[in-house]
Image (cartoon, rainbow, N blue to C red; front, side, top):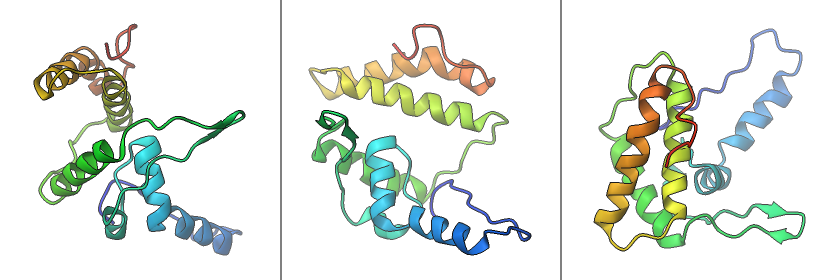
Amino acid sequence: MLGGSNLAIASRSGLAAESRAFVDYLTRADNQRQLFSCGGYAPVVEAAYERVDPCQMQREDGPAPPSATRTQLARLLGAVHLALGSAKRPSLVHYAQFSETLRECVRAVMDDDHTSGADFADAVERALAGALPDAVGGRPGAEDGCR
């Protein structure tokens, strides 16, 4: 496993076979690609980094618009893959809140139009500066979120 997913089956589970099938389903490369492109979760299997599959979420009225372009997703996936080789997960008591806030802020910034890479980087920095300190403490970000 590459990322931070922890999937386990209780030794006394009465549904061990069904649970194993669910774990196998979640860790298939195609499902890992969808979890990445739709939810921002770093793939936990190497094969998921071989290509990008844009998000294919459905709404009642049809397909949801893509949250990012194929090019944006490919660049982000490449950066995540590179970072996993050397990065260590921060040792935080409230890592889940931190991780959720980080994903929400980056997603919010990606939804905006930016005139340059520097403009995008500044927007990310502003969004994270306001929300991450609270998230590290286990609290949701500021009332206005990541903006």
